[in-house]
Length: 480
Image (cartoon, rainbow, N blue to C red; front, top):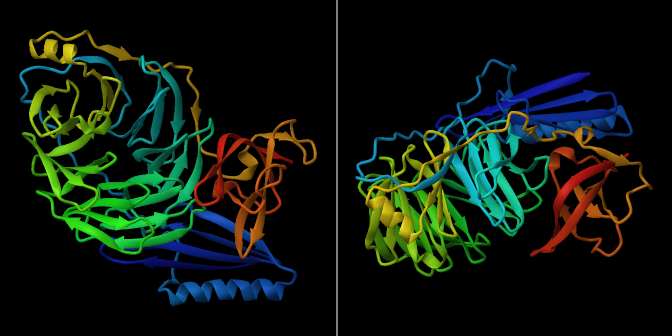
């Protein structure tokens, strides 16, 4: 058995990754990832030892030409993951917001998503919790690293983590749906019809398709890109120098607008994007040409923002533990204290404003007109502190096919189930539908970590997506 270990480490926050090739008889194993991490492994079998060694030499040569060099494992330390440096001062507001309930996650929280059924919150400890709208905890996921953000794409919920992976949380067992390049330090994500947009520390925008394959990337004018939002027309990206819109297919820049201060957060509606900045403002920019349509002035730097449907009301959270509401034209309607740290992200739904804060709390604020008026007069409800059930199980990601529940042997799939199969095609692992009634030429978006050539899996449902591929909905189980 022979092993070749290579590393590529660049100064200034560039690449910091390893590549290891092992030849063992007729098998070639390739292990790769971020330096200091276990990485992931791919194995290939060859008919002769000579062909195995030739394939290994080719892989090593390709990496050396890209700048990799021989190294000793463990000598170079893992690069520290960027944690957002945030302070939180006491609120200067005279009154506190009408908080209905509060759930303490235990660590500073950036990720939030609210849909018709549930509220999702993710924190820097790697915990993701789901709650109902009454504030009761429904489920808990334990991810390998801190959660930077939560995004939704129709039925599917994704968590972008500091380990460089994006996890699909749509079923009981989470899976790594996208594996971002090991030199990308994720700051924020958005996803539209299976296409993932990643903004990172260095100010770069990376676009990845549903098959977890790189499509295009752009370097921004600044760095620390905390804003990325996407629709079918463009990707809207914000960094320390402003906001830029790129054509969705990567063919070019559509417009660029400098903002008053570094962009610290972004939100979008159908015709506008909203940039929260370090100079105490939220700026509304037209998606068509980037012109500033309105400005919403706060009293401290803006950590987060959101709107009610259509942008009728605009909300903002600042670094001094205050939350604001503005009319569409920029008129400030109210400012109240959060009662629990500064809001790092937020979302509005059905007269409720949900905040996730620097102290790790998920806070539900009654944003109805009557409740706000009462709060301004000093009358607020008694806050209910939500408790985590001691017996609540924690679901962790499956990292191999063997970790997936087995339901039957091949040929004995449960009645009415949908069977998909993994196969090697053009040097890559693809997944296609075996069951009748589906387009057999379409690929299935499927967790890379559990793909094994020849393996078959049972899925609950498949949904066609724009671009001609299927997306899995519900549990994934394995056929022996």
